Amino acid sequence: MGRATLIGFSAIAMWALLALLTDASGAVPPFLLSAITFTIGTGVGLVARLFMPAAAGRQKIPPQVWVIGIAGLFGYHFFYFTALRNAPAVEASLIAYLWPLLIVLGSALMPGERLAWNHV
Image (cartoon, rainbow, N blue to C red; front, side, top):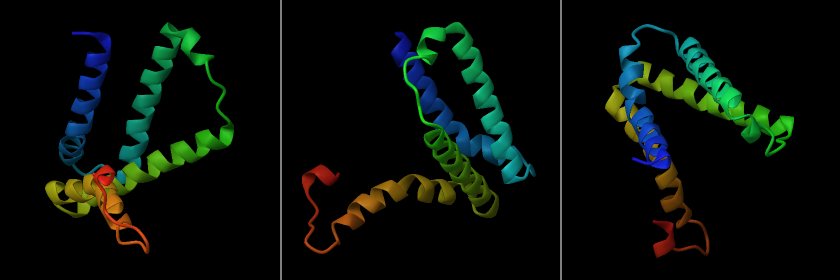
């Protein structure tokens, strides 16, 4: 199995296990769960950076991009964890993973637009 395949498989496995592990986390508050999750992810990223220092200097990303990206990811996961606390995991996950598709399909309802093959 190639490195790219292994990375892709691990990303799919983490995505698939998110709802299950969130449900298994018990009574941990959503904000704390988000903080713990991103602390672990940051730790893994920093360790990876130690082993691949050349990758760290490739791109200079402006600070405002970091702030918006981190706030967006943190907010999304906070609300996702909150939804899983207040609704059954299957229903909350269905809504969380279908909304991008619903936005694309809903764009066909805009004035002068129609649903085309490239929307799906």
